[in-house]
Length: 115
Length: 115
Image 1 (cartoon, rainbow over the protein chains, first blue to last red):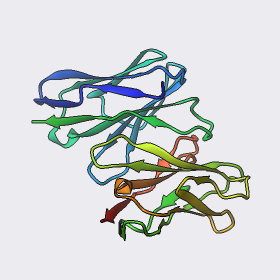
Image 2: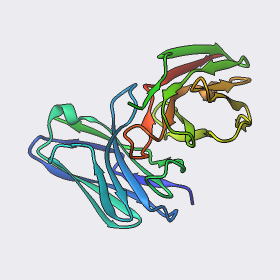
Image 3: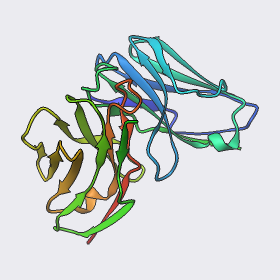
């Protein structure tokens, strides 16, 4: 199974809502990533988890809160978002992080719209 | 600073023809990996091809091949016999963007294959 799954596919939320994005992989990968992607732009790294520990936070606002409950799951909790946070949120995994050796496997993304 | 540059924002090609997408990078490292990823419209990003810098032989995957010039720090992707399904954003990725061995993506090239 070389699949990374993400739910939901689409999410519309108001600025006062709290919601969560979910990502799952069963490839035994020990690194998981959250990216934000705007149309026709490259993915922007948000967070990296390595062996279930947060290893990189790219100065992301605190209204985004990541969580890695176990080695297969990655969540992104959203609270008090702004309209400019509307984007495609991608989850990815790789065998390891911090070596530059392994390719990343991406999920299909969650299309988030903040109203 | 370690950077990845894709100088062609958009390209188009006729079906069955060959097209080359360019990517240059800057690094002081000697051993590393380089990646090309493909993101079709509204679909998942997937790895196209990977090149190991210490290998002189250019990587090939079916119709996709790279022209890797280590001294020139150039990593171009050649697509032969282009197909309609090759229409996508193509991102060059280099894992030394911030000294943390996490991939840095180029700005991408939007490729359209015309029938």
